[in-house]
Image 1 (cartoon, rainbow, N blue to C red):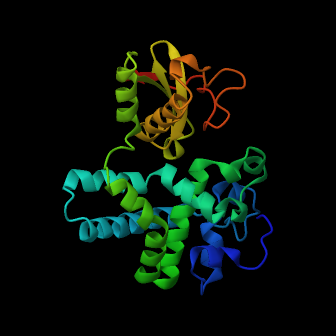
Image 2 (cartoon, helix red, strand yellow):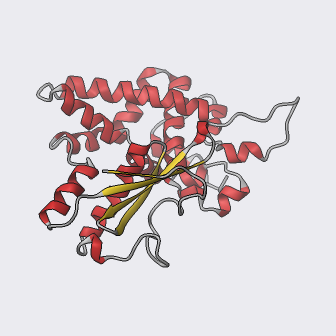
Length: 266
C-alpha cells in the first residue's frame, strides 16, 4: 500500500473505523491476495465479498433517497438516475476523488500494469469501502457516506434522466451529423466469474471509441462515452482509431484477446 500520512482516508470519507481490519479488507485487491503466503493453508481474504455487500447497500440507499426526494419522477426515470449514479464510471470517479488508488493493496504485477488507476478496480474498492462502513458502523454511517458522495450527482442527473445514456446520445449525434448509426464490436477476456468485456464503437467503418466493463452493456456505454468525448473536437470518424498507435491513451483496456467470442451489436 502506498505510504499515506496519518489516517487521511478517515478524513476524506468522514468516518473513522472502530475495526481497522475492515478498512484494510476493503482495500485488498485479489492480485495482492494471490501473492501472499498461505497461513494455516489459507490466504488472506480479498475485498470481493465486501464489494458484494457494498453494492447492495449502495442500491438501497440511492433507491430510498430517490423515492423520497423525487416524487415527480416515474419508475423508469428513477431507474435511469439510479443506474447512472451507481455505475462503474461514477464509482471510479468517486474513488479517484477519495484517492483510494493510493490506499489499495495490490499485487506487483497489477501495480506495474497501472492497477491503482484502473476504473474497474477503483469502482470495486468504492463498493467494498461502503460495505466495510456498513459492517463497522451500521446503516446510518453507511447511508451518510453514500449520500455525502452522491447527493449532488443524483440532483444533476435527476434534472434530465437518461442523458448519460451514452449509446442513445451518440446515436442522436451521429444521426444529426448525417453519419451511419453506431454499432459495437465486442470481445471478452478472463474466466467466467471474472469476465471483462471490451467494446469498440464503429461509425461506418471507423473505430471511434473503446471501453471496458463487467457486462456487455457497461462496455458499450463506456465505448459510446469515449466516442462522445471525441465529438468535442470534431466528428469521431475524423479522429484516429482507438487501436491506432498513440490513440486512445485514456481509454480502458487493450485489444481483443485472440480466441474470444466477438460480436457487433447496434
